[in-house]
Image (tube, rainbow, N blue to C red; front, side, top):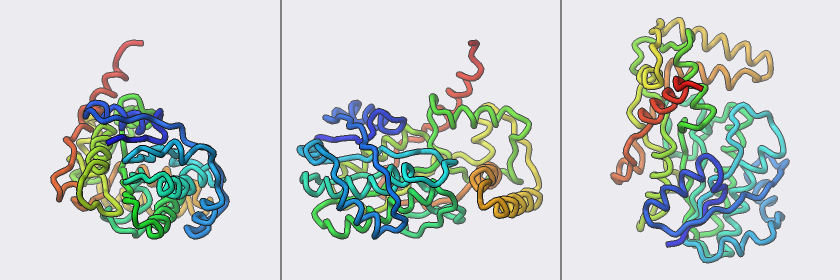
Amino acid sequence: MTWLVVGGSGFVGSSVLRALGAAGIDARGLPAPRLAASAQTPAALLEAAAATDVPGLVAALQGHDVVVNAAGLATPSAPEGADLLGANALLPAVLARAAVRAGTGRLVHLSSAAVQGRTDRLDESRTVRPFSAYSRSKALGEQALALAADAAPGLSVVTVRATSVQGPARLTTAALVRLAHSPLASVASPGTARSPVTSVDALAGLVLAVGRHRGAVPGIVLQPWEGLTVRTVLEAAGGRPRVLPAALCRAAVVGGYAVSSVLRGRLDGHVRRVELMWFGQDQVPGWAVEQELAPAPRVREVLAQADGHRSAPA
């Protein structure tokens, strides 16, 4: 098998390429085309994809059995904009059309569990509840890609929903470590809620398993839970979190969203991060667990390594 990773120089794409190389798979990276979009519905995005010509894209995809879309703007606090929609919503549909023309066997698109927002339990359904510009762009990308897949029965299209992916060199991971060491580090009692924090190594392993699976793969695959709770995440990052009354935390979250609504949702992302720190988010085991394809958990080691980088002398 030969693989092409679009966005192969990025945080996730480079990890996928390393995992493929370690597995002895012939793979190379491809810079993602820069796209902009104004379409706000899946159908309009599909029409925009049909009218988008990226010179050389079909030729670049030809000869590859699996194409991975690891590109996009991974900026949860980003405002609405044509660049965000182009990277996260339009590009998946453009790649699907190009993959059909190139004769690609499987397209693996990396999305985000943020598309399901504040749902109590993440799952592998097409149900989405986006709450921010970023999550809306990722949800639109999934929906436009699903329409493209319905029109291309010869192409296997799989959306992998990544959860809160961490890596030793990632800025968000460094921010998590700083939070763990700060007086703000806290969890809602009893602190045993599941946390969706996961590792980039496990995500790369999941992409590998999905891409080379010989049988049918569902349209959406959720990244498996790596076993940490809201408390053990902060502890793995070097912190000693306080345990706060759950009722107090819930009242604070409700108040935070109320203030954000007055500000037209500007604080939703910040409030959501606090909510996840306190209450985490449950998830179904999912297809990868059922098929015994879940990668080995690595997030505890990743957080410890990031904490070590913080503690190391300059």
